[in-house]
Image 1 (tube, rainbow, N blue to C red):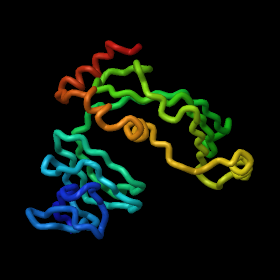
Image 2 (image 1 turned 120 degrees about the vertical axis):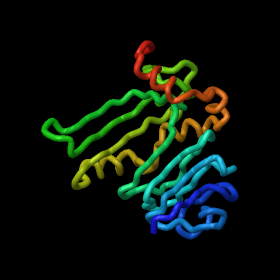
Image 3 (image 1 turned 135 degrees about the vertical axis):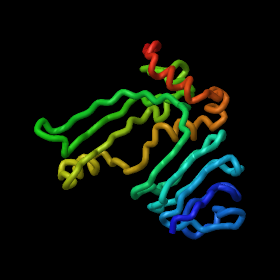
Image 4 (image 1 turned 90 degrees about the horizontal axis):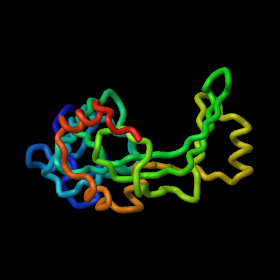
Length: 207
């Protein structure tokens, strides 16, 4: 099936799954089916899209809107999906990373992320640090244990010894969640795509 489904139109939060008729095909309610072409546009009053815990496989995803959509949930968009998003800068994320890996390969990697900061930033230029940034996870740090084949025994011992808890640590999303969406929207006026590209390519500001 390759129909057009416009999602996110009904009562918040907008659920993107295969059992809720939260889409429209023309003017008729529509269930999402794998392979659908999905459009998020200005016809929706709800801009928080919750994908639950599903693995979604749309034919394409297009975000064409002057609004700011937030995609939440533990779900994943997968498959040979074509995405067209009119994305614009909103947040600057900075943190100090301490990383370790095997000298011969990167099959096992361990990283510590400290001093995670987020701040609204609508500009396309490159910066190393923002003024008046919000510390996202303080006083905690983020430990990431990464492996490509077998979970090493010493990883298991480390987790048990220090009582580590597996959890998500979305630096971008958590900064917005703790401070509120208005913190971002007030600081990010609309800019044209052309001006953002010019800012990024100019490289005039890199403190």
